[in-house]
Image 1 (cartoon, one colour):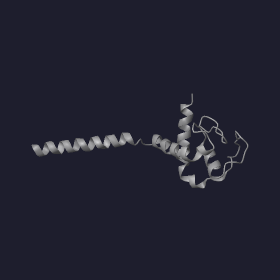
Image 2 (cartoon, helix red, strand yellow):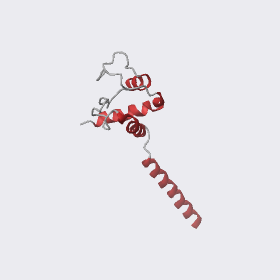
Image 3 (cartoon, helix red, strand yellow):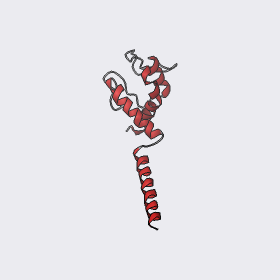
Image 4 (cartoon, helix red, strand yellow):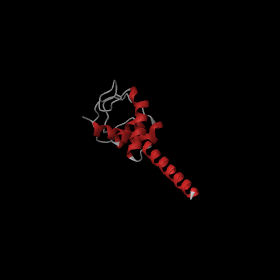
Length: 117
């Protein structure tokens, strides 16, 4: 009897730990947006505003920027075909080291656009 009680308590403890970990680490779009926020704040705010809905010192507001735009600007320093830039400058250098973060950045910027007042 005592052994079963200890086994049940152990199972409850394991379940509680698993649930608390899943709450601390959101999945899917939420975690992508959090990763994107980290990249954005550490790299992009040198020129863009920390609030992506606002213009930065050099770069324009970029909340809601499409993945296509991010790929063209970040990887190649260009604009997608047919895109009209907010600022016609060539100041942003390509940053191919961010290729693996494009989806996360797009998720963060989409989230910022949804929260815009």
